[in-house]
Length: 320
Image (cartoon, rainbow, N blue to C red; front, side):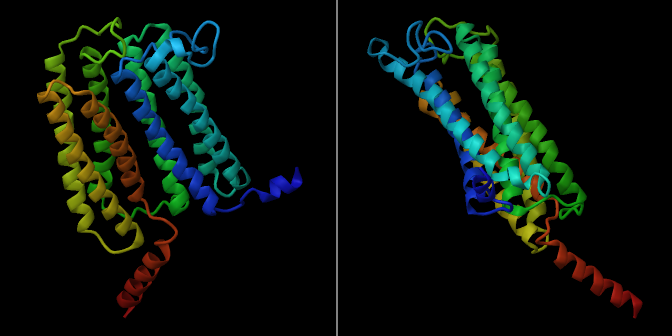
């Protein structure tokens, strides 16, 4: 046991980064498979929970394609659990030096069984659209946590020194809040549309056309904030933190444009299944990029010495 404990990393190594990346990718992946369940009408492919049928934990040949799709999505949960356990083991020896990594890994790990239980409630309530929407919202939160964890693994512990200007540092959390509103309205819009996950599942009986417009408005506000933040980021300096922020904002701007384009396409073409699925996954990517950009506005140890030297030069110059 002691040998195993000593094998666990006491600092960020390659295997720690691997599990951090796996955490984020798997959280986005399960959104894609969950979307496939809904968009193929396989939401009740396994009609009960936690078993797939009253007599079997796995899908049976009689359940056909829908049973395979739904069971495959449930099976992916076990992969997430394995990754979460691995992530926890990668940081447990660092819990004193890097407590933020330990706390984030625990929060992410606890979110997975919570998501599984919520998925079970979704099935047991015959795909109630509000429960289905909550299922997606929790997934989006877990994507944000995984992105936060990955950023701290890649960059290091947070610092009290802010690397971005006050305006930029204020825009990014506002953009994340607006994005959250857009995602909530998106789940309500989906709950009023044709993709119920099963032919007999209830809809929320809200005005789908009106919700599509309401969903688009915060999306355009979010895009505007993203463009402004990107311009401000590129007007910044050249420290490692500035460079990371520029890259992240470029990616966020591009993915937001893609998301808006896919949203307009699906709204004008009768909500084709593939476009709706892409829209769901890209939304998760946008969440991850927004969270990454938000934390990129805080200085990190790699950049602090550069800033300190700059301040020393300024002090020396003023003394002369």
